[in-house]
Image (cartoon, rainbow, N blue to C red; front, top):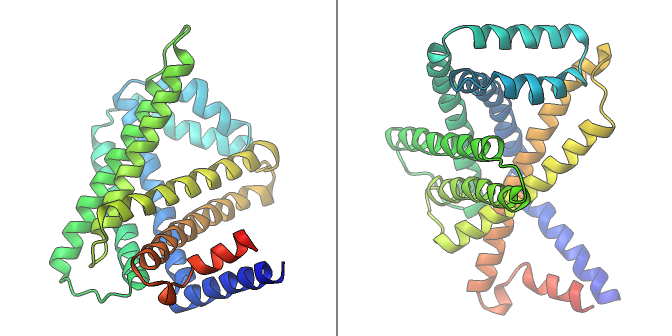
Length: 285
């Protein structure tokens, strides 16, 4: 028991040192801020796509009632007015503008992640801006396309009858796989030193699992606890969103840090391993 406790404390100390050494919380804050701004652009893009696809019923029957049940009536009226304006007019201009804003903001998230990943991999960024910026734009387009594809798979791929459950499982697995592929590409090509593909896949899987877990917890909080119908509650929406994106940033960086720790331990001799011996000590006692 004593050995297990000492190993556990050693793991905690290791992670405290890594957070300080690689400035993980600072990078998580930068990533969260860009995510929050990008979320606004992505919301506008989503409304434009719904309007262009003539899916107002999806908004009226599913999305809007979920919003109306959690916010003040005046807020709901304002949100509905914006949606009505989008659905009543051509969505082409909105889609073009929102797409440009979303790509720009998501590329900012990726550039922040580039710096964080270089810290985690302990490499120097030696790529000039005329390489980093186009790369971040390309990865942003890939991520937005994967995200949009995942949403379309979930919302528009339903069937009725006995095949409903199997098809729903396949749809969700395909959507998760699409997002995981996008993150795998970002993790592999965003940093200046590209990790091997199998480790990029492992790190992406860690993040997607952590992100889904975080999303389920926050969704349950919104469903059962959160109340945004008061004056204070309306302000809490922004705190809630900022906290969600901040934790998502931490989950991303912790997943990448854990992936790198395991990779280095697997490729190193036992005397140079930093994490696996302590994990073995916790498990074996």
